[in-house]
Length: 74
Image 1 (cartoon, rainbow, N blue to C red):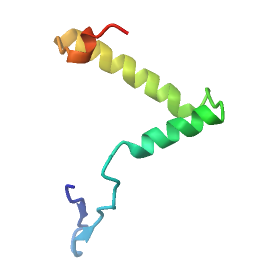
Image 2: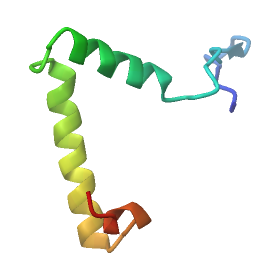
Image 3: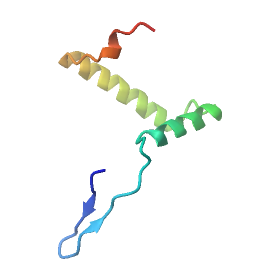
Image 4: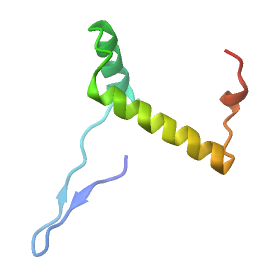
């Protein structure tokens, strides 16, 4: 895991690294499961996620980025 350090002028460096699960997306999956369990479909974070997903999709379209999963039929 990369280190995260902070050093204010004239002070010593501080290590800000936090321990993290080997699956770095675990926290997101756990939160998603909690939102589903509690039927929280209007959670403010979901609106941000939707906007982000739409932006990333449009950026990928404009730049021609295609992932192998894009051609998989669901």
